[in-house]
Length: 180
Image 1 (spheres, rainbow, N blue to C red):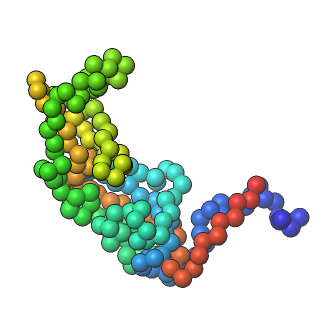
Image 2 (image 1 turned 90 degrees about the vertical axis):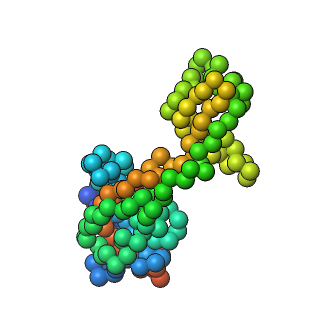
Image 3 (image 1 turned 45 degrees about the vertical axis):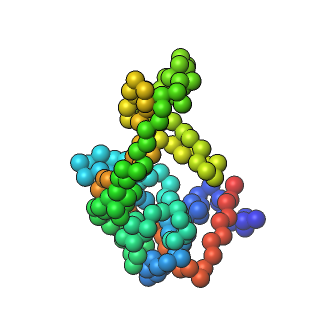
C-alpha cells in the first residue's frame, strides 16, 4: 500500500533494477540490457532497443557464451558494439547437420494442399529424446529430400550491440514489485 501522498500514476517503471553504476558484470550478475543482432551488411536480425530491456542472469543459459563474454566487465550505462565470428556466435555450419531422406518420408507433407512443403519450408522432426528438431528443406529431388538442421545463423558473423541498463551483483536477489 502506498502512502496517501504518493501518486502511483507518476511513479517510474520499477521493473528495471535500481543499482549503482559501479558494479561490473561478472558471472552470476543479473543484467538488464538493450541489444541488437545484425549481419555485417547492416541487416537487423533482432533488436529490443525500442522495447523493454531483456533481463537475465549471466551464465543461466539464456544467452550464448560468446555474447556473454563481450558483456563481462561492463557497467550500467555502458555500450558495446562488436563483431563476433561465427564460431563465437551461433557456431560454424556443420555438414553432418545436412541430411538426405527418402522422398516417401515426405509424401504426406508434399501432398498437403493447405500447407505446402517446398524448398525453404521449415519441417520439424522428433529427436531421440522426443524434442522438436526443426530443419529447412534445401532440395526436393525425384527420390530424396535434403534438409538442413544447422541454425539459420550458423556460419555467419554477427554484429552484437548492447547498452547496459542495470547490473545487480550475483549475491543480490531480484524482487519485482508491480504497482497497479
